Image (cartoon, rainbow, N blue to C red):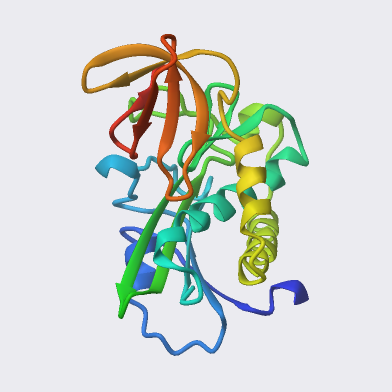
Length: 248
């Protein structure tokens, strides 16, 4: 890896059930601050809400990062979701516009999903003892067979094959830079960048909760990750992830 990634240990494996499981099962012998496991294929790739993540062998980016952010208060753990989302988004926005973050941490191009993130936090003695960040990004795949409603790949967006290792290196470089910002206490800068990068951050759009479909605009995101929507009657509605969904 390049010199600016000296704090990462990158482990590549040809196949695994999921990179989150693989990295969790590693013996923790590395002296690096961040451990990364990447693979060519996942047999049981994990998505949000218990969904699976479809990825054709050798076509996409599938990796997990393990770190120990003990300095970060538990109440602020959503910042980890924000910095990995921004790390990916910044790479894509160097190529094309129209990329955004769909709350809480899906990566979108227009109304199409190009990447997803699954974060698993271990808490011990009141601290974030370990964080595992799993990432799946569609890079060079052109056919999707799982029935997912709106997948798209970087190849389909920009019209050319991309070197996955170069994209991974840039994401990790960005991630370390954002992580250093966290360590320096620059939380509000990160939150503001995240807010400006959100999908459908303006105007009214359809959403669905347990009571049905309604129209609302994004009001703000709470520091703990709650989304606050303002409906057409001016009422503020707060939701955790899984309590509300976008109607696409």
